[in-house]
Image (cartoon, rainbow, N blue to C red; front, side, top):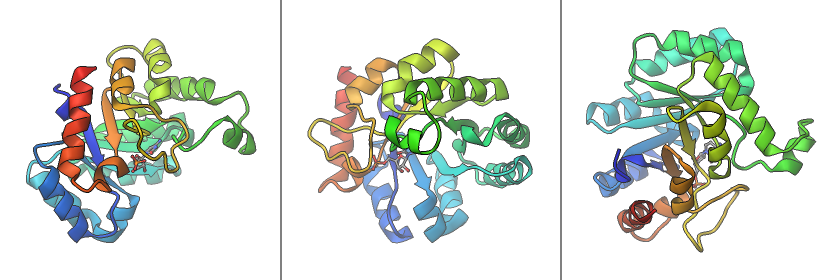
Length: 231
Ligand code: C5P
């Protein structure tokens, strides 16, 4: 995979028109488009199917977390949209993830599990009644995802090495929380630069605001790809 193919841009915009503008500007500069809950709620499955029909790889980031039967039905529905990547929350449990893997059937969609959201830190996990720190939680959830037959996980770049060590070189590790030097953190609590994420062994980097809010999104994406290439 080239560095460009490993860059996923998060289309976190309020409507289809803004998303179409970004897709036009960024086609050829990034490897995949991520459609999350904001855009999916506003623009719907037709927008996603339109992207995949045009040959654009899509990460449908709806983070399913429900009872196994409901998640299985949602995964089947997403499979018909032709998305390349789809995620569920590992905290939904082993049986929920197994149901997701079974429901994918023969679709080419790769299934990944959110470990601990990159907006959490040790203190916010503690408030949820989850003591013990972030790395230990991430590690056990990644192992659970692998046991369920998931293709990989979503985690912060700071946890890539421990996941690689626990789950092996083939397991996908998708990392949001990417911030080029000097960029605003926003709500990301466990960030790293593009170069650091690549050096740690990330499979894919997810970048939202540092690209979508840049005055020239294509130039911002190119700069990130250059940094990834240098790493
Ligand atoms: O704008 P920013 O680069 O922070 O966007 C990161 C994207 O990755 C957002 O769409 C967010 O929903 C998503 N994401 C995340 N942390 C996770 C999983 C997904 O930030 N653990």
